[in-house]
Image (cartoon, rainbow, N blue to C red; front, top):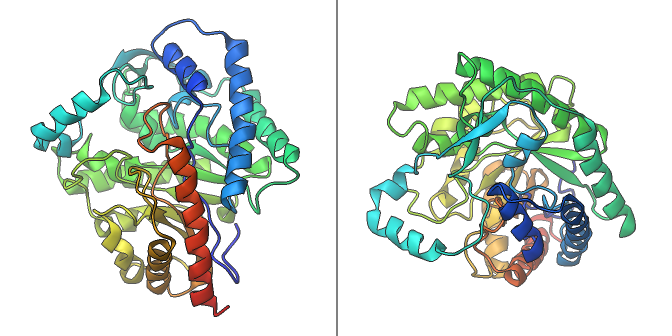
Length: 390
């Protein structure tokens, strides 16, 4: 895993805007409508090549495939694993329930928008879960490698994402296994195929684990904090088992409180969950610090420091607003985190979360996304001058 030796490197959290035609096909398929598989594959590959070029143009050092060939950051597994079917609807977040006026306004804003839902019509585990064919993830890795080759090499370090077993267990409800532990174990064994294949293909692995913070105000909103922390510890133990053959320095883990604009005043505090998160056998963490509810929590990195060989990808760009951050603001945010960590070489500048985690749900206009990532690059340059005395 690269570190910021001499200058602050830039990255992002994974999902990037999908073209409208590709999004429409994903929406149709998610709603049970027939789609042309050949057309879907062709649009996905074309979008992949385009998004790689755009990242390089925006100055991203550690980039990915933009998740263009997936309809959402975790829902795609239903096509790579056995056992999923049926359907259910996730309970709303506690902060949305708390503010009915806000909830009503969101309903109005989303009317008529074509999206792949991350709450309704979600599949469940209705049979034994196992990975169907390693060739499925190998093909995605090969397509990404081909896109990199097409642009003449690409990023300083390429990465690919895969979900945490915890977010799948929470969002794709268990209707088959006797216990949560058994469901998590099956998911961990299946995801091990993805984790190992991504790393073996030469990519840095990012595990997307919003469940380690988000589920406190979703699945566990009516239960004691200790119950949620115990859940987080079970998920981390499952992740560690799935990473048994993966070097720690080839994995970073993203944790957040949900990629949606809302009050977020029911969020669990980072200091209450960081001890559990730190048990993960990974080389770094991706955490949101642009988010106005959590910007102050960089202090946790001083109070509960990471290991000396671990990096922090600091979210300094907000993926939920069309404001384009001023580069000086970006630089200030990077410097604050660097002071908390105590070593700027262990800090990489990134985004709080993805820009289109579920196809069509992105709130930032496509052209603004690239302006924000360019601001990330410019802010990182300013911070580099200050932190490394260039």
